[in-house]
Structures are given as C-alpha cells and as structure tokens.
Image (tube, rainbow, N blue to C red):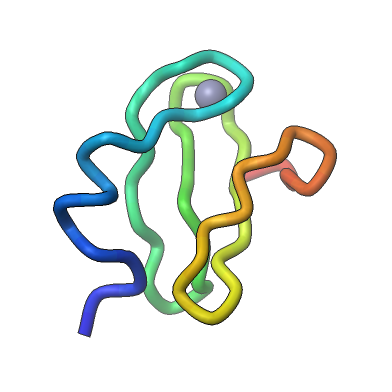
Length: 56
Ligand SMILES: [Zn+2]
C-alpha cells in the first residue's frame, strides 16, 4: 500500500525547489533529494509546507 497515490505523487513537487519527491515508506515521508528536505504524510495527505519540512 503506497503512502500516497502513485498518480498523485507524479504531479507533486517540492515546495522549496519544485523538484520531484520520492516516497520514504517506513518513515512516512516524501523526500526531496535535491534540497534534502523531508515532508510528512498524515492520513495519506502529503504536507508540502516548507515550515513543516525537516532535514533529510
Ligand atoms: Zn526540494
């Protein structure tokens, strides 16, 4: 069971740098490798807010 719908994941982008995000399933995060930020996923909803990001 993916954290986020794969079709949705394709259109999501990091709010800081606009690069694609990748799922980190064990940690329930969407990770941006371009700027080393990780965004939480809460109840299947990615929280794509820079002020909720944590360093990767
Ligand atoms: Zn980024």
